Image 1: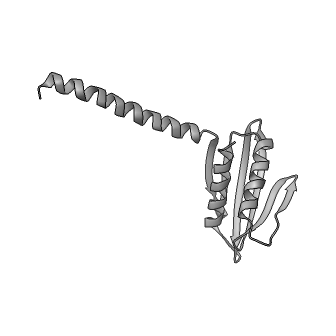
Image 2: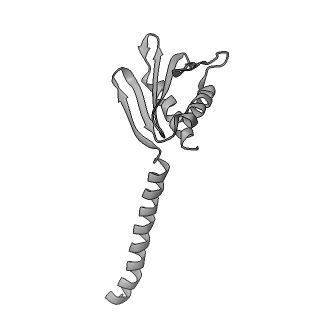
Image 3: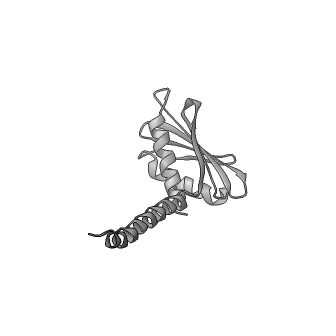
Length: 136
């Protein structure tokens, strides 16, 4: 295959691959654009700040915790300050939601099981909360 024919075939292919990978990165960035940051503080406190107003985030967080609560248990919900206590598979989970600014909300999740911090449960609950907030 001579060089001119090869360049005519490979150049559009390279352009397509570049555009496709850029579109995938843009789609991932747009999907996760509502999460400002996430971190794990000492004592396995999972913290996330989202660019969603607290009045939209709070109902979604409450609904998400209803899916996690163990059968036969009830959520303990306080509207001021916005906290939820739930029993999730034997762990005592505490979720706090607070407004930082207009369209900025901070969510904190901790879990405790057998008098020790339960990082796995806290991480799973935070992940599910952020997934559901992404659907708003």
